[in-house]
Figure 1 (cartoon, helix red, strand yellow):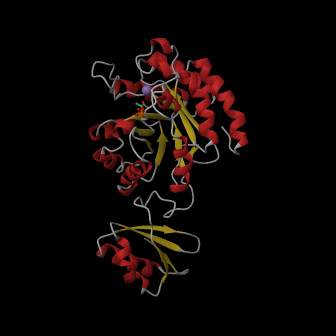
Figure 2 (figure 1 turned 120 degrees about the vertical axis):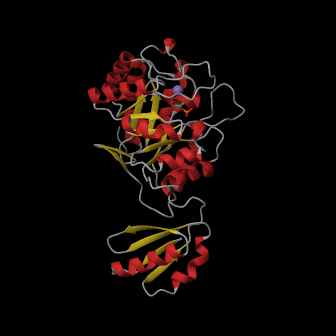
Figure 3 (figure 1 turned 90 degrees about the vertical axis):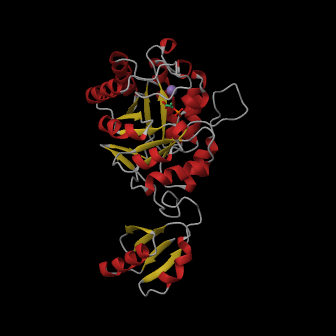
Length: 337
Ligand code: PEP
Ligand code: MN
């Protein structure tokens, strides 16, 4: 539930409420506005303690949070969350495009790709160093060597970097190199991993599990926020359906719906969602029309030779074409790229 305190409530008054909340075994989340302070009381069945607070003189009103996810809900926070990485803002007016190879294969291909995607308008460099592959015999990524290349190329190009951590034991290492930590679709419900990234002070890109409902997706984000990290970017990357022509089915209705349900930014990954290079541009345009705050796109200097996901990776020139096609649609929806 949310407790709204009367305007002019003193620090002493706030402390008194916080003490009561803690005594009941719940966690207080304080948000001080210009006029009023509101305190979120988070915990299972917190609303049952409503009367304890209603009787307090300084309490103006009490509003239940009806959704099972609390901190991520629009009921808890009405204003959109904007995540800042240096000068970059994710969740603001600008549609942020992240691009790069599926996996970091070597330094040369990373530099080449990074320079080209930057020139075309990408604002974040992607690239996996730890790869969650379906087959144990497929390329598993370069590990820490890949992270080092990402950091080096980030310094050269001044592009922040997003890369995946697959295990709670990797979080500390990955966060030393990356600007945004990615949690992959297969790990969306790895709760220990979510709690671990919840303890760090770096943005997290949380990808939707391929067989997860919107509610489960938002509950996973709730794990990260409730562990202390409020900087979560959601990513719709396609779900499993009966359709076999595409790798997954891009759930664009989820994007529009999620924007109503949560204050967190959401981006779209049309590369993994479709698994097909020929659909990436049209689905990117559709994602922006649906309200996406950004895109994450796989790009490779030579997709035919890629060690992973070549069939869905755009060649460098194709990525420039994509960016050009994004300008009119971002303008049409009152945003910029
Ligand atoms: C990725 O973005 O590198 C990736 C593996 O995607 P997903 O977790 O969505 O399958
Ligand atoms: Mn990939």
